[in-house]
Image (cartoon, rainbow, N blue to C red):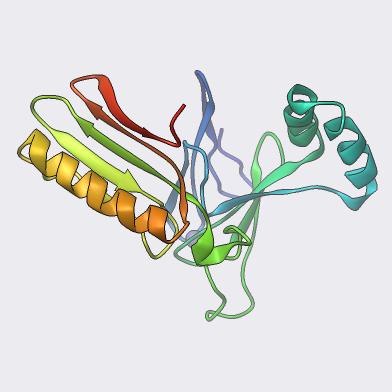
Length: 185
Ligand SMILES: [Zn+2]
């Protein structure tokens, strides 16, 4: 949906998740299509803080509904540092007063200690290993030519992240079979 006032485009595709893609006024395209994104946060009005906490205390299932009910998504453009508020059927963006403002204002309060995911996959023709977007220790590698190369890279990264206590969870899939998971179930 194109908004005349803001010049922003909102595209939503309903599948398992709501996928959102829009362009910032600077021209940068922002994709909201996975969890744990470093450039997205949620704003909760102080007027609703107590109500949200009370509903959250009624159980995990309630908590998620309550969280989305009482919050608004906000994004930060990683090119121009604009803050962009999702107001339902459109976006409203706020331009920074200074060009030197950081572009990672919405990332985890844990900073570089944020616990990240690690994934490895080999399908017989190609493979990939990726971990931790939005932090210094991050990566996406898809230039593997064998299963052994994928395994070697996966376990190298696994050991490093685990030893530094910055690993959330991980799994390695070879030919559609999970051959390693952490934490173990
Ligand atoms: Zn921008």
